[in-house]
Length: 253
Length: 218
Image: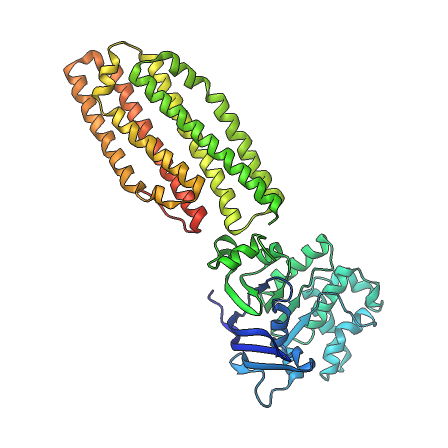
């Protein structure tokens, strides 16, 4: 892996009340790369990526130890603005969640919030974002139509476009294809391959074939710990840890 | 991966092993036929070629089916890949057995057993057969102890081929009428050496299956 690290965690531990959901996680995520997190339900994958854009701040009784650095700066440090962090680190969720607005407004929403009002500039951002999300050709004739009129796969790509519109550096995806059919899934996977040219993509997936198809690096988590983190090809050919091997070959989980 | 996959995989490994021993049996009987100039046994070995091929075809198909249906990874993937390579080597070993049987049929002569025994062929064949046997045992059990000394054993086999070559030349110079027969026996030594190489190939793949590490046994 020659690319530079963009996110580094050091001894990251997270508690929900008394429960320790993440245990001492130290990892480096490379830029211009796809990193996949796999592991059985409840192992802490989603909790971990939610740490990366401070989504866990919204959970009561959530406490964090250790650090998460974005370009060397602790995102939990004093004076860090969570809203700014969430702009730089965008997120796409399991279920497509477009706003009940038009296609155009969904994408323009973020830039507007960040103070862009010039119509021509917004038009440009919307087109560019939709193109990057491989959706432009399918919707360019009906930008004013409600986002809810799109298919599930299109809605998910719209959510990706909405994320791209605010020019993030990292895109977090929490099981982005689990509600989609195989064709829509293939489109999202192809899109992920395109996105990594410009962005760092971190994807949580239950689908191990998906992890092996789309990612460059892969982390296997179990009971809140990062058991193994390495190159995807190596993890799926000959993992170092017995536990990883047992999980990816379906012997448990 | 599901229990169904693991059950099918265990069944396939059993059949791969059966094919391996079937091929080893062809080689063993061909050497036996050579030593005893038993043309009937040689004919019998020759007749097993069809069964060997069809086992190979069926198992190859089975490997592709497993990949298509289950997309195995990690040790499961390595086991499937290993099966494919083991059957390819086993088929070659069986076919060399058939080639040796052909030599027996082409050169049958009551005096010949003296010549074959005079060369170091029986000794070499014994070493090669035990290497193949140990490779297959390693495949069966996953115990790498069986193949620990394969490299050194292969060196001994290679040296024996050169010995047989020199022995053959001595016989041929002493008695030109033995030239045809000796040339055939030199071919037999070559076949045996190739069989040892295939046993090393099997050993390499078993090592990969068990450890995930690719090695080269020279």
